[in-house]
Length: 269
Image 1 (cartoon, rainbow, N blue to C red):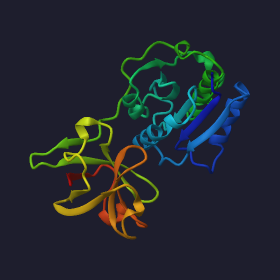
Image 2 (cartoon, rainbow, N blue to C red; image 1 turned 135 degrees about the vertical axis):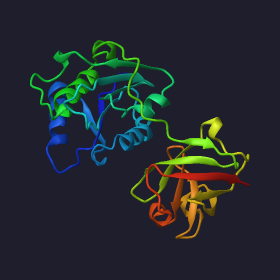
Image 3 (cartoon, one colour; image 1 turned 135 degrees about the horizontal axis):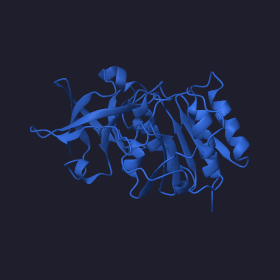
């Protein structure tokens, strides 16, 4: 059964006409499509943030959903337009690394370089491919256009550098901070479902966190409310990554962490 849901993820914000005009193009080409906003509040040009949010959200939609993601600081350049089919979904995005985490997550996928100009709007602005290329392409795919009809296969899409997760000589794991949510929770690159990243203990209940040679002992719990208000904690978040958090507070501010920072983690029983 084909879904006519098209999700939208952009860095366009909500103050201007950008998102609305994309939805207008979609409605004109595929009137039965339902558009769902994942977010339009990605910081301008923050491809890695967009990639992470898309990775965390895409699988919770019905099979057949078309995921349209536009964080495109290279708009108007010769960067490619990608269409990916995998996991029961279709993804449409610029070839700039925005699909990196999704491509890593999908066990089987087919990647295509969309080059058929007859699938785009007749008039294409060099500064708004979201409206003139990506939106019409997503609408036609939602309407039943096979992904392989958009253009030739693409075997070398742009992939962002893999976030750092590696063991250290002193028994820790060096882990990169890959994201922060609006609550100040720090999302690390340590994934719960990857065997080579799993904790050393069968049932760890705490971890030692080292930030700039400063060591902290933090409980590893099942929820934010499992510790007293204002206390630090670690938790496997809803996307499967280890998070550093403060119950009722802001871990990013308290720990002085930013995306891209490295921390050392050791799990303890």
